[in-house]
Image 1 (cartoon, one colour):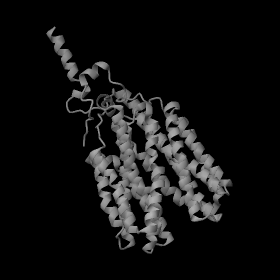
Image 2 (cartoon, one colour):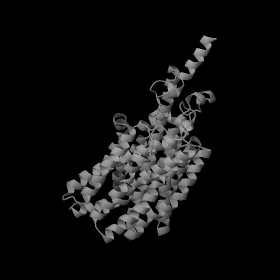
Image 3 (cartoon, one colour):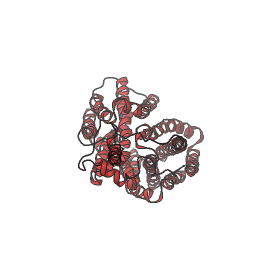
Image 4 (cartoon, helix red, strand yellow):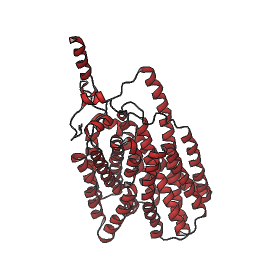
Length: 447
């Protein structure tokens, strides 16, 4: 009897919460230490952190060519300048997993935000063009890290049943920042100066590291122990699915960016004013907000692959509209379809990857979807201009309507059988809960 009693006590000690220095899986921690209300608070904090980053990315970015011209940049160099900014954000996104492993995910999140503050201020006081390019590269590099890590945090805190809705909510920061950022930046430039614009941008940017310091919590995941053969089979299956998701993301971003570039050029050729061209982004952003929320709810109810396919078909519709577009409302409609498609692909693929992968792998894999979008931007902005010049807009829009169909076919091959049933995402047995229970009031933060 004594031996049986002692064995039972040892079994209790071996529960996940007491296994040496190992840390709890975020999904289990969420059940044990964080209420649904606290998780929602974390998602709200992440939304505002995303907004702070994208205020610069969406609000200031359209002004960068004009700022470069102030220092003597020619049109040919402006294209190189913008390509460098996308290359910088691509590198930042690619290195997110490595840097977070080296410095710690929360430390990297805070440090990247703090690093951008003085750089933004200095942007208003540069004396030469090379300084503009250099400082912009730093901002976009740390911004790529920030957006990538915000997605990882979202994966940790999004409830399984509302995961699509949670990622869609985060993706709203893009149209919201485009609308608010564009309005504020335009007003400051009209009334004040570039220096004032960059100082205000730095102040808003400060929201990101401030939330990281005082509000956003991080709970380190535990690598899941799986039997050798099952682990190998699951790893091979997930690798194939993950590659398919990256391919779909690349095709979707290529077609959306190419069509958006063609939209501006088509409107210019039809003698629309600059204000009318810029209004397509505002109109598309406003229309995309309710659509993104709706698709976020639908993906939780009807599945990720169907929602991804729907987003891709919206790209097809937007591209076809551009072939026949002659009036302003045509371009508004096309812009709305394209922006909704872009946001849908970003949020739903992130939710799908979070469904498929153990939480411990998110910091390495999830930022790669952003990397694919940035690579697509570099390719499409260069390639679309060439296609427009050599083959005309109709050919460009036709190609943009065909590529998403190829991406839809790829979604059929996606392996979603593991969705929501991965190790580390399962409910903790009742008996284990009793032996691993910790405070319900506060999560366990780790640096």
